[in-house]
Amino acid sequence: MPEKPQMFKLRGIRRLLNRDEYNEHILYRDAAIQAIIGSGITAFLSVYLVRLGSSDMLVGLLTSLPALLMTIAALPAAAFIQRKGDLVKAVNGGRAVFRIGISTFSILPFLSAAISPYLLVFGRSLLSGATAVGNVSMTTILGAATTERRRANMLSMRLAVNGLSAAVVGFLAGQWLDWAPYPINYSVLFGFAIVPAILGNLNMRQLQIPTSALPQAKNKQSLGFKGMLQLIKDAPAFRKYAILVLAFRLSLQMPAALYSIYRVREVGASDAWIGIILTVQQLFSTLGYLALSRLLRKQSVRRWLWLTCVATVLYPILTALAVNPPQLLISAVAGGIFNSGFSIFLTETLYRVSPQDQRPTFAAANAMIDNICAFAGPLLGTAISSLVGIQAALWIIGGLRLITGSMMRMLIKIKKANI
View 1 (tube, rainbow, N blue to C red):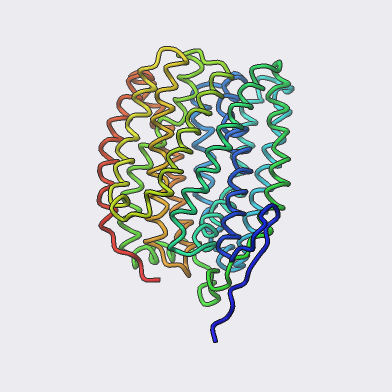
View 2: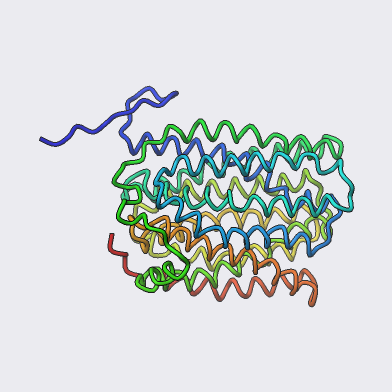
C-alpha cells in the first residue's frame, strides 16, 4: 500500500500543503527577505564606495576581490556541505555571517576618508567565505526542495517574488538615501542588515528537504581540486556547459564597476534616481519571471530561451547612450526583461547537467566559474575604460555579449546527466 503523502500547514496559508508546495512557499518568502539585502543594501555598495571618495580601480576591486576569494572558498564550502549534508544550517550560517558583517559597514562614514574605502573593500572580501557557503548550499537546496517537474515554475515564481520585493525595497532605499543627510542615510541603511539576518534564519529553518535529495553518504568523501577536475572531466555535459558559461558570464561581469561610475560621474544620477532605476529594472524583471512561470510549461518556449542571452547586449549599449538619469530607465527596462530569461535558462541547464547526488560539488564548480568571471570581468572592463573611455568600453562589451550570447544556443543540445 503506497505511503500517504505528508502534509504541512504553513502560517498564513489555510489549506494543507504537500511537502513540495510547503517548501516552495518558504522559498518564496526567502526570496522576499533576500531582496532586502540584495536590492536595499548591497545594491548600493558600489555607490556607497563612490560616495566615500573611492578611485575607479577600487570600485572595480569591490567586485573582483570578493569574487577571487569566493573562487578559492567554493570547493572547501562544497566539501563541507557534501560531508555534513545539512543544507539549511549551512545556508543559515553563511548568510548570518555575511549579513551581520555587512551591518558593520554602518560605521565607515565616521572613520577617516583615507581608510574607509579600503576598509569597505577589505571587509566585503573577508565575507566571501560565508557567501560561498551560503551560495553553494542555496543552489543545492533549490535543486532538492521540489520535484524536477515543478522546479522551473518554482524558480520563476521565486525570482518574480524577489523582483517585486526588490523593486519596492530598492525604491524605498533610494528615497531614504536621498532624503536623509549623509552620512546618517548610509549608516542606517547598512545597519538595517541585521533585520534580514534574523528573519531569514527563522524562515529557512522551516524547510523540509527529503533525505533522498541530500548528498549521499557514499559521496561524502573529501574532494580536492584535482578530484573535482577529474569529476568534471568525467561529466562531458557539465564540461561543455562550463566552457560556454565561462565566456558568457565574463562578458556579463565586465561592466559591473562601470555602471555605478557612469551613473554617478557621467550622468550625475542622485541616490533617489539610482533607486528608481533599480526599481524599474526589478519591476520588469518580475514581469518577466511571472510570464516565464507560465510560458515555460511549453517545451517549445524553452527551446528559444537562449535568445535572452543574446538580448543582454542591450543593457550596456543603452546605458552608454544615456546622457541624463531618465534615459537610464530605458536600459533598466531591457535589463529587467531579459535578465529573467537567461537566469532561468542557465540555472535549469546547470541542474540538467549535474548529477543530483554530487550536486554540491558541481554547484561549487559553477560558483567558481561565476566568481572567476566576477574577479576578472570588472578588472578587464575598467582596463578597457581607461584606454578608450567609459562609453566606448560599454559598446565594446556589448559586442562581446552579442558573440558569447549567441554561443548559448549550443547549450540546448547538451544531453541530460545521468542521475
